Image (cartoon, helix red, strand yellow):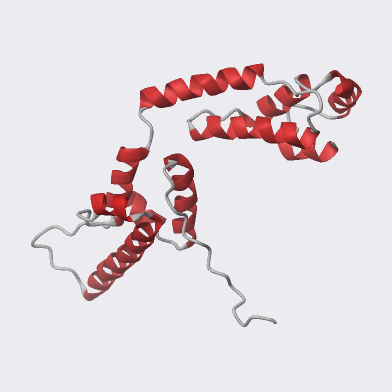
Length: 195
């Protein structure tokens, strides 16, 4: 049966304790709703004693309404125990900043985690019996975790890592790729497409 609703509303990303992942999804969600600017920068404050024009008042009220909508989305993303810790926050920016401060890893912890990910990336090799797609997924998972912790390896480093760490049964394919393509401009998607 066909539905009349052609546009399906995206689900609000629920906070599951993994702040960096949730923050990325929630930021994208709020950008799609055109509320991210308010969450990131807050509502411009009006100095006491300043008389606003009707247009400025309307704009200010619109910003407050948008902020309430953004706040509502943030409330819906959080479970009750977390929600109770942020109920005193007045704006979506206050809520976002509070969540970031509470749940985003400290610099020292992130550095240690990043160091472990670097080691894992460098020692990574394709396992015997592993499919090419499985290996790509493992490499990209580590590269994406590194990016979430502040270090973007970039396509060139990931492509070169994949090519040099495949099992020997793929040596002939690796050689033909390296001869046929410029690996300094080859994207991960293009490389994966060649397999």
